[in-house]
Length: 476
Image: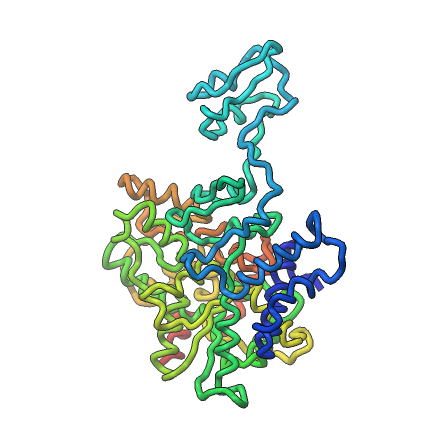
């Protein structure tokens, strides 16, 4: 039964599961230091040079599972002692260099960083190299390679550097908390803080707990859930959530339907708009294109819009969002969103929650999850928001021609924003998704891959409500 893409994800899950299990039993505080020994019980290490280092790193993973460094506002953190195995050389000349006469690498380098020895073999002066990669691109033997760390390659906004101990360092003034580095780090040395303890505390004190309180807890699940938990049916996941203590499970796609209608109106009124659904994209604009903030949609994200509706219609309710996104954890702490969200979990963390209660969801009966339209559900993949906005225009009889620019990944977002900033953008609506593929490429997914897009579209076609208006009418 395959649940995770990588063994790093599986390790992270095991820590989360143990922390959650002890939290349910009110035994976490007195047993927390034993978790590393429980996961590595023998005297021989399974992943590191020695069992003591392995347990020390697991201890840091436990801290992240319990909320991480409270003094660090970033939801992404580096485990320094786990970050010591990657090459740190930048661009280097390998032994594939033939000492050719063309010297294209030297000609293309604008910084004078390329020199040659008596055998005509190229060398790179690190004090002059700007890591532009021009030399590597022109070498006919591909003899110049980048020794950048996977996290640095993954971070397209250059928020990751190295500290004095050669461990990865995150610049919070640049980081958009998308989690790309989390998924790509082969050693799991970069991870997102977990709020799984907050979720458990909320569930334990709810009306479903015999010794709990009187409030209801709602699970708002992202539409990308359709491509996750492939070993079970979606209806079984719904039943599993209710067995965890949730009063009801509602699709964030219903919030997407709400946002699509409002965003279509706003776009027609303003004539130019960028989406506000992806918090990492909005954060990127704040940090790098502050003059463009006036163009960002004033609508809440689908997560926040639906949570707001639940809070306003069910006094005392608690709302927990479950999705693929690390940046959503940060969004939940914004002043404009904080009143409506009580916790945010990833799909990885939901799997840990299920197993911490020994719930085999594949054996459960199927519940029903049918609260949104096709268009709300396809928000999960790149291009879905645009399709929904076009449909919302039609349903509201708005006479406006959308010229969308669909940005699949933060690099595409950057190019579109640069053009908008210079007044040369051929479009009037930027759909910005920081993760490649959209939400289905989020760092908190159990599985990643091309199949996810087809899964989302298939899930959308199964929606009972065929129009956005039909779905929203359920709220009245």
